[in-house]
Length: 89
Image (tube, rainbow, N blue to C red):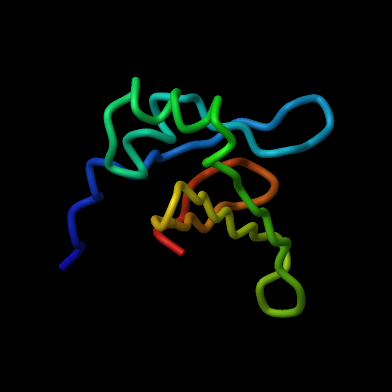
């Protein structure tokens, strides 16, 4: 039996021209479980950042995106070639 997809987990991420992962502000706020306005205020104050790790070996072709806001962090596993979110990381 397949578990339901978490409501706060996007199914897809985009990449910019440089190949970097891009989440919209509403996607990031939902992923962190906060209201958009709170997220934007913390973003402006420098309390939000992200780290992207590229998989090697058996994990080649995958990315792990970790989004940090204050003491909260959430992770996504993403297919590097398509931007499809595989699941929580």
